[in-house]
View 1 (tube, rainbow, N blue to C red):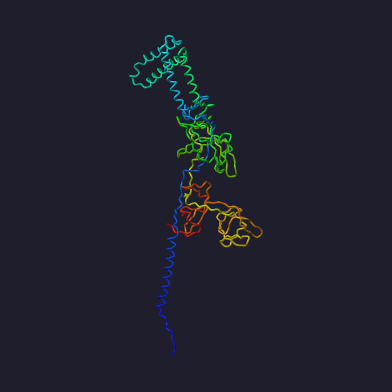
View 2 (view 1 turned 90 degrees about the vertical axis):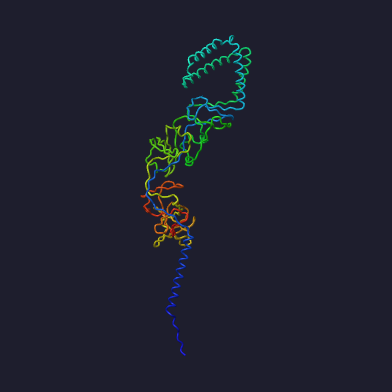
Length: 484
């Protein structure tokens, strides 16, 4: 009997093919869903053209011709002058006393003075100063007679003048009475002198040794920032945060504590480290209007360019002198200022979209190009793929997972040890659904937050309405992205 092969129905073949295609589609959908729900979502924004009212802000310090005065003893301080008053040479600026001891002695002194006055009033007729006392009493009576109707006129200026005149003549009469020291009064006067000497020992008077402006704001940096150190301040010393402490009237001070300072001159200086490109148009002895930050506003102030001290090819120490408004900044040591008040125009880049790359510095002759790929050859003949992000006349600046510091690479007739790095900043552009890192050229320091304005002329690879990624920590170069 002849065996005949049974044919598979066409419908069965089509059904199997359909199931296979359906199964593959389901696998693809499942994989896409897993990728969609597990991959971090990427946020992005469009580059916009913007203006900024905040040009480069510099940090600096104020240097003044100032002298610190300290207390020799602990105690309660009494201020004789206000902040920013002018103190004359040898004028008592403040006193410091042992409060408890002095108050008790002053009470004793007051009692003795009253006793002396009572004794003298009972013996006025035999006083050596009888005529002087009589004249003082007559003067008091005259003042009262001339001003008898002042109190009913409600003229407070006249009332105050009347009261001052009475007090002045009473004090004069009492002083005359207290000056005589004969008989029983002499013994009382000796006790008075002893108490006055004790009070004097418990009170320290601090006088200004030169004429100048009084300031009770102390930051403990007065000996660091002096005129003789003006040209030798470091970059770190001009970029500080300082805080002044004010000496308050009737507060307690410790021995050796700085309590006030005298500013001897209206001349004061601002010292700052600046990029050379920012002061290309400035020369020593030029006059210049700068803008100093004051309570979130920028106040214009005229200065003279005292010194421009080159520190390296990129940076200089700028010393500016001002001859006005020293009182306005006596609370300050650190200062923020702008050299110009012009607006910046360009592409607005959020700081959160800026990423940093540390790149290897490679001489151009060691980099090989094969089609659209760039490679290096290590000493062991291993070929390593690299990506170039920046270049200059003699070097490429590259990134590669296959390289590390101290690796040795070779070319046809020489070798090179990788050791130098370069830091660049850039943004990820995602116009096509793939993240592409592009370097940005921005001369100033990158802020911690907010946004920066970059010059379109210096960044020709970046265009208006480019879509840039804002959460750069969640993205890598050439990564496919899913936008949220």
